[in-house]
Image (tube, rainbow, N blue to C red; front, side):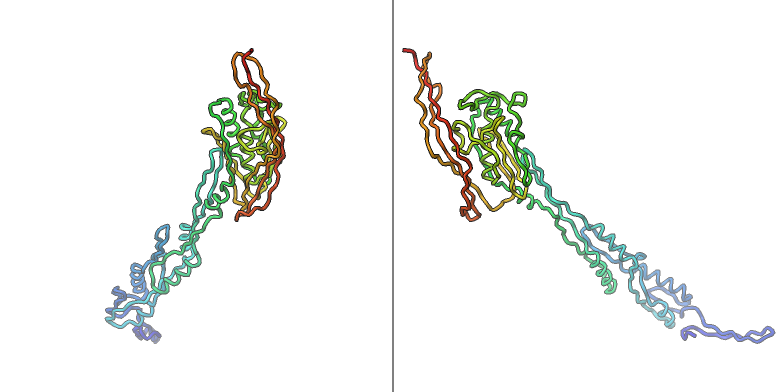
Length: 408
């Protein structure tokens, strides 16, 4: 029998004699618990009243996070208490305080909800390449939420009577950053030549050819063909008549000027370490590059090279302001390149030819021929020469001068 209950005995006479004994089921008079007057109430009613009060005043649990505050409070937060034993021990007139400890049955679901709201996937940086150049879209960091630490922090806070927690989040960098992409698209070679913008047809042909090449990407081991990329030099393909070299003569022909584009690209390819598979010299010397560093293209002759690197290379070209320019981009391999032209023999031109006409003038200037070689030099990062390889050996024909004179 509970010592705190009020016991009683009653004798009943009704043909037989019975002795009934029992204990009172009410709280002592004048008792209050957590400010709730429970004196004289049944224990069940008193427990319910006190627990309502505890629930109303139960401290919440707040998790501060980048996505905002998350609050767990009664009745999501529950508690354990000593209310039953406290009421049964209470003496008349006592004012008591119950001991309550918060519990969280759904802590795992709550922690999952907090982490879901804060964790996010990052995005890789992106690079777009076209004839206009490079466009970089920066990466965004992801956020990683430490779910298991959050559960431990919740348990610790509940046990220690704490009401606030800082969510542990760490940045989660993406696999590809803008810095990575820029390092993979550094300028590794540049070469340019000058042309006469006043020659409109030739300028048109140069610009058209450059436009068709610019924006080309060569993946590892992939080959480039000038003729396949630019297309046939015909009027139907957009080209105009301008001066070309044909059979050792400067004559009018469709596509004049395109060889300056192929020559400029040839030199840029050499300086970037591309492996040249096909190139051919003009029959006559040209003025915009050194001997044996030109690249004549025609229906029978092509400029071809291969990307030898384990990374893509990007070709960007431009023709403006009287300059045709090619730049090649990729990853720095640690090796740099230079070219060298060497004249082996000079060939005097034939004697000048004189023709009669209505005025005195030079119809064609004489030009000596020559035999030449070109070399590709490679250097390490410290500038030490690694190799010197011959590119080509060529012969350029001499040009006979023609002068018009007045008849005698």
